[in-house]
Amino acid sequence: MVSIIVPAYNCIKSLECCVGSIRQQTYTSFELILVDDGSADGSGELCDKFAAEDDHIRVIHKPNGGVSSARNAGIDAATGEYITFCDSDDYLEPDYLETLVQAAEANPDCGHIWCCFQTVTGYQKENAAPNYTSTKSLLCYTLQDYMSLHEMWLDAEPWNKLYRTDIVQTAKVRFPEDLSLGEDWLFNLAYIDASANEKIVVVTEPLYNYIRGNDESLDSKYRKDLLDIYRRLNDTCLSYLRKWKLPAEQIEIFYNSRFYLYEKVLRNTMRAPDKTKREKIKWNSTFMQSDEFKESLQARKCFIHPLYLFAYRSGNFNNVLLADWMVAVKRALIHRR
Image (cartoon, rainbow, N blue to C red; front, side, top):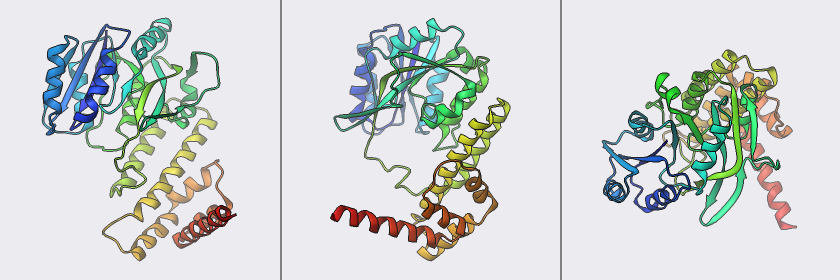
């Protein structure tokens, strides 16, 4: 049996579609655990209605504590052999459970079953992530390929995976409730580390539908603690990579991703509502001059446009803004032609 955990918070508009896709699964040996995280829009009552209609469904009502708290409550209540997650605004393909369980049973020596996912904007399905050209339905990796999978965004979320409940419970793998960003990644790293098996099977068919909403994204919302969060994520990931003794080329991918995170920190600072533009530029310039930033810039192997490479190496964020202006002017001139 599979325990499907859905955290629900003020999601009355999307919950019916989500739950409907789960009730229509071709694999019927499952329990659906709806965790009402203190909703105030009627979502909790809707959860109770679903439970009254279907014996597969159980509801947990709890005070609002965030998505990690809700998922952890679902884990504590899970009784299935496997655990999987679905966000309340997303939905599953009808054969999601059947395909993942079949992959797990066909690969008993595999500790990790993942699948590709589809991003949905409005009514339009975009390319699957990652967009495999392989004709094989299953692709096998080992832990030595971990950062390559990370680069394809396959490891970042919990909702396109099938977890073995015994591993989760025995190792007490839980979502860190003190984080509002990156908690999914830390959960997955802890689960991989707790599993004695290094084999990862990826189902190439996109069976999970991720709905791109209108909420403020990381690229538009200011986070005061963003640098501290990224430092914690980087330190935790690097400690696991070293523990797993990954090859040098995988470590290089890590440093590439670290540099991109620091780029986001610089852009995030420019959205700070409590600082003047001059203060933001000064803070960014100081950070660019730090050994921490210089090391990430030096260690990265990814391509950076020479204009931006010069700007970052200068240690002056004004040069980054100048590069932004020059790129914008060039694009405007191209569009005029």
